[in-house]
Image (tube, rainbow, N blue to C red; front, side):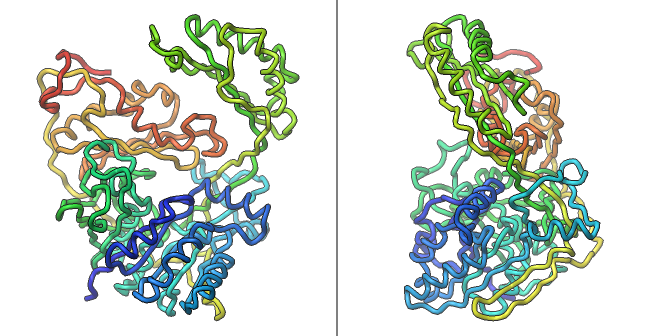
Length: 595
């Protein structure tokens, strides 16, 4: 039985801390260095980059990091696995080879491709193969896509490592696949080892976003040490798939059950976490604090993966302009009404001439404001259209209002340039149609089947003894006094995970935070379809709010287009919490049913 493999993360997104790779390879022993550079929005950004500069649709920051650490990795036998290849894994691998040559090094470099379905869309269509929309189960829109990439699993990475690769660059894999690959290779797992694979997926999900596992973006951030510069995490994955999440000594941040739970809830939906290699059951996860800055994850069970792979698809949506006008002092609603009427009176086009128009009043002003800024609300407008000239025209209309409308007029956000935006679609394609191609740079190509044998295994959630909600007096307080959250985007949907840190608190939360209660606490979601999933094993509830982000991040008109702050908004809402759950909390006691 092989010893655990220590897999470190050095990137959670394209643009993450450049020094992280060096920090991880120099800060302590590791066996593999991984990093996640891709997100749904990133694929759109890379498509735009490649349109301007062919063969450049990959994350160039990864190349810079390889310049810093390649020598150390080669000398120490550290494997490197990265999805920084984006839309151009072959050219990314060539760029890595150029760095190696410059440094006088000779690592074996491989890349994995096959995820790019864009050149195959017409072929698939001609064969009667229809990609369906992940959300509606209807055929995806018949538009011109600029990217279409299936989420590959880990077996192409395993093949590359089996063939001696020191550095493996991939295109669009799942975020966890770059961790599962080294783990499956090291422990010589087979595709039928579903429980071990599921454990590796969970470990990969925890470390994929880098410092979010060590206290970054954590609701109870004031409890975290050294958060000015938190260290990146690693996962020590054992042969049975259990893992220990940790970080190098003398680095900032903390790892505890709360930080790990928070990251487990990031951008998930049901407890059945679907992936190309395994369906990981998040309702079987067990967490214990094994030591200082060490959390052990065990008990994870796996089921067969779905018959389809998810496909990230982007198309151009047209052009948009966004503008905002300050509404200061008193009579806010009347001022907003005049601005809107005056805007359309001065605009070259009318509301119905645009493909989409959204106007809203955002009340950030305070009663009896102590500062000028506290007196300001805003009227905001977003227009979208295929005609760039139309969207650019709103700047002139707004200029006409400057001296001729409300008292205190000034602009908060200037627009009128007509910026292009993309629309994201999550498609589904049969997994047996998407083989993985493994190429050793300067060598041959191997094709790896993406299919996984069916086992028919069905998993039962872990049983958890949760006490009943405590009775007695209640205290009016922000929900965040007791609960933490983590939220994020999945296409046009947002997920919102809520967790507490004791079984007694969960007994209350589970009964209190229903879908209807969430609608009342978050009126913006009152008309949305909302799914609710209980995860008592990690004292959490996850909500999926469908359609709240519109057509995805790039097209969303929300100020928080990626729903990163959605959970913190919920934590700020005042509710009635049992006083026994809030020892030492000051505030008026009352009997009530909360909000």
